[in-house]
Length: 166
Picture (cartoon, rainbow, N blue to C red):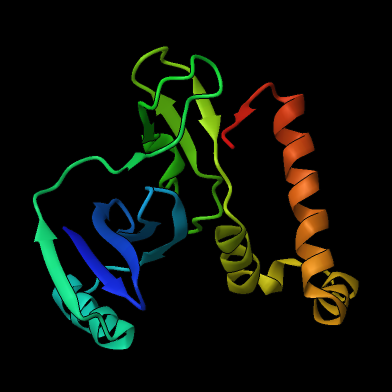
């Protein structure tokens, strides 16, 4: 199911997809960039949707027919704006610690796009994976910690020759 709504003047899309291990909930901004992604066990999706909408204080909600959410950015390989989330970036198990990877419908190459909001969501949702010193650094200077982590991610993907979508 795909819902579109606005909160505080910001357009948001939420997509719920059935996966082997439960339901994958993905939140996109108005341009199609992933802001949050989490896997819920087998649950009542309708109930989850009502909870999310209530918490969002959404003024207008519109259910849309399912369609691939496209990223409104240019492919770093060919320059075409034909990017769609890769099926491989969704879920391969219980943890959804996966970089948002996109496929280009034009040149068929993959690239990734990491928003600051998604990185912060991943860190906050998975603090237990960090060592004590790293958690202390996060608490001391959150922005510096997230910036350093993003730089590490950029270097890792560059070493694997996966282009970054800007």
